[in-house]
Image (cartoon, rainbow, N blue to C red; front, side, top):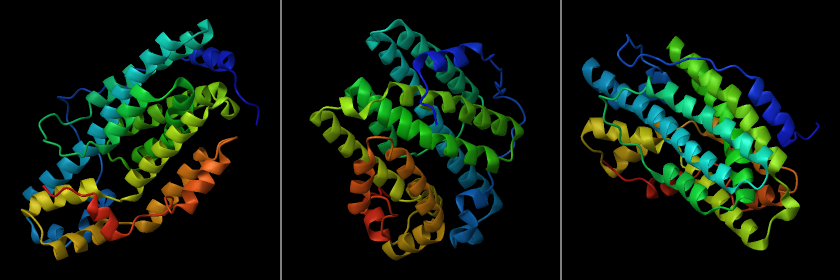
Length: 296
C-alpha cells in the first residue's frame, strides 16, 4: 500500500463537501441503543426492576457513550489547534486546519444527540489520558498515538456505534465521523516516521500505550457503575456477579487485537510485541478490573 503524503491528504480533504447532519436536540429522539447493546438484560437487576427504572438506566448508559464521544471530539479540536501552531510547513498547517474544522463539525453533530437532561457518571480516566497526550506528547509521538493508534482504532469503534444504533440520525452521524477519521488516520501515517523517535519519545509512547490498553482491557466499568447506581449499591459478591454478567470477554479480546494491529505500525512492531509480553493485550481478570472501579 502506497504511503499517503500530506499533499495528497490535504487535496482529498479540501475537495470534500461539508454535509450537515446536525440533529435538533428538541426533536423526537429514539433510544440510540437498546439494552442488549450494553448487555443490561444479562444482569439480575434488570429483571427485578420497573420499566421506569430500566428506561432511566438505559438513558444514563447512552449518555455516557455520547458524552465520551463529545469529550473526544473536544480534545481533537484542541489537538488540531496545537498542531496548527506547531506546524513548520504550510501544507502541515493547512491539513490540521481542515482536520480542526471536521472535528468541530463532529462535535456539533454529537451535541444534538446528547440528552442534556440526563446526569452522566462517566469515569474521566480516558479523557484524562487524551488531555495528557494533547498537552505533553511531542508532535511525532502525537501523530502515532492520537492519529495512527487511536483514530485508526476509532474508525471501527464509530462504525460499531453506527451499526448498533436504533436512531437514524445517530447512525448517519457516527458513520460520517468514521468516514472522516479515515483521512485523519492517513495524516498520521503521512507524518509519522518511527526512525525519528528519540529514546524519551519511545519511553513516553510505551507508557501511554500501556495505560490505553489497561483502560480498554478493564471491561464495562462505566456500565457497571450505572447498574450499581440504579440498584442503590452492591455487596462485593453482587458487584462481581454484575460485572461478569455485563462482560463479553470474546468481544473485548477482539477489540484489543484490532488495536494491536494499529500499534504495530511500521517501525513500531517491537512495541506491540512488548504489550503482548506484558499481558496488556488481553482482558483483565475480574479482580484486577474491579481494583480500578469506583463505586457510586
